[in-house]
Amino acid sequence: IQEIFTKAKLNGLEPSKEAIAYGKKVNSSIKFNKGLAHDLSMYKDNEFDLVIVSFVFHWIDRSMLLKSVGEIDRILSDKGNLIIQDFDPDIVSKVKYHHLPKKNVFTFKQKYWDMFLESKIYNKIFSKELSFNNPNRSKGNNRYQLMVLEKDLEKNYKEVKL
Image (cartoon, rainbow, N blue to C red; front, side):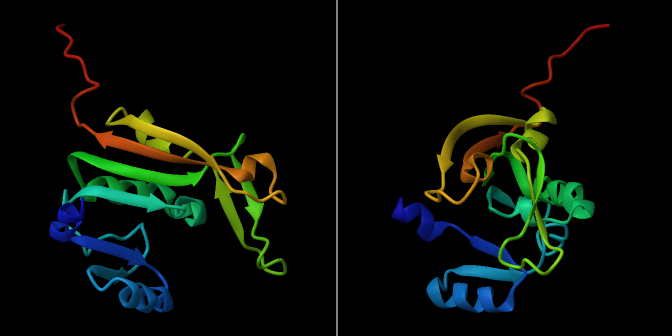
């Protein structure tokens, strides 16, 4: 496994300059770019065999959600893997961010992997339900999923003769 990561080209995307500085300090082998998921123009089409989106989707402004999904799809190669880790709520919900109670800041909880699966371009190859050990969270906010998807542009399409 170490050999795989030694040869891998690792990239990270982060909107915070402070987080990028910390990331570089902790792991200098990762190339960090400052940016947001809806604009991945610094990356080429099909550039990556693996994309990991961990606890990001629930922060994305709803007006940029589908653009972000499109950008992630654009940079992931056919037969590549997409790992999504995010909340797994019982219902689609909007939750006031408790760390900024006086601000009008929300997170948005839904099963983000479903957007990829419903396209029929992605297939689930692994999933694991997990939970935070936090009794102050409601059940729906305590649960999250680790979902591994494989992108396959043709697998789910059956040829039909007319």
